[in-house]
Image (cartoon, rainbow, N blue to C red; front, top):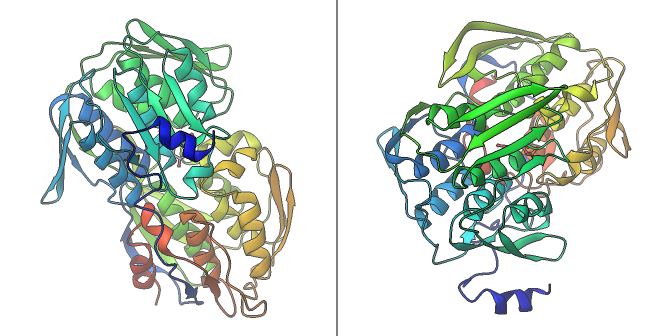
Length: 463
Ligand code: S3P
């Protein structure tokens, strides 16, 4: 549908594009630096932070959260939950969420501005889908290209209706169904966002909503919903995970400590492996098995990553990671591990560019529909920095330098393009540390979506 027609259909949508839309680009050249040493702590897990606010907003009473990631994506979730009636505020070091109860979400008066955040959009579409309200979702240029059909399909089966922009993209409007219809849905793509959207819709749906996962994805929704007192059963049947959520749930408020984000730690793990003389401890890193694939692959490549003081934080396994500079060897990455490191491929590709020999990856079509087409974006960026990369339909093949620094972007004279993608910007920053002349990144602004203090930590950790 053309946007003008969409505008006519959505009279309550006073804005058609994101207020969080990206301001003027902030370029930076990331120069080779000394070893990374000492101890650092990365911000809270993004997936758990989003869910803490959403589930807190659906509980009756006060949920308290420490370690919340205060990145733009999570703040977009907080603003949306406020617009639907919850109180979400910071008091000292703690976030306080006063929930409205399952079924109690209010109709937002304005379009919900999701900025760059696919997780906020897809999970909140699920929440709205089973409430008797409608909501319009808008986002920045990157988010407005991303496919929402994958959530529209199951949520339509539950009774919600949608008016989307061409190709099933934002801006879009959701009209929730109340009561919604419970479904049994087998995920056609391995996506925790789609799984969670259906589970969250199921919370306010009579009966049992079932999601079948042929390939397991991050299980924070299952763990956290149980923590909030929802009835969630997980069973393995013929190698598939069958997840059942009992609807019309009563959620009890919780006190949550959010562990450090392994996806953010990933940049420092790779930086310490690549920069000679590094010996860095990253404290409090979440090591949920559905998230920790990168560390396993880097160990297979010869990386020295030691887990110290393994413990539990907020119902998740956590450890301090000691990472020492290591000679890496290229490998064929098993596509089966992809869901447990889906956000970490850009930085793995950087590690592979410095390894001895060839690294081959496949089965990564999903990377083409992230904040950018990450296969194309990293292939272009690494090539500009002087790496030898071949792009295939569903992966990259990278011929490493054997530990020699990459030439850097000076020779090409142009900066690498981040395409509004935080993880491309941070991965290429790491490539800059392991280069001869530095890597110029066209825009560091998107880093604030998930890791606002990334540059300060990087500057502080390396001599
Ligand atoms: C997320 C799921 C993943 C991941 C994203 C966070 C989540 O997306 O890439 O950063 O919190 O559920 P997909 O569901 O699209 O794989």
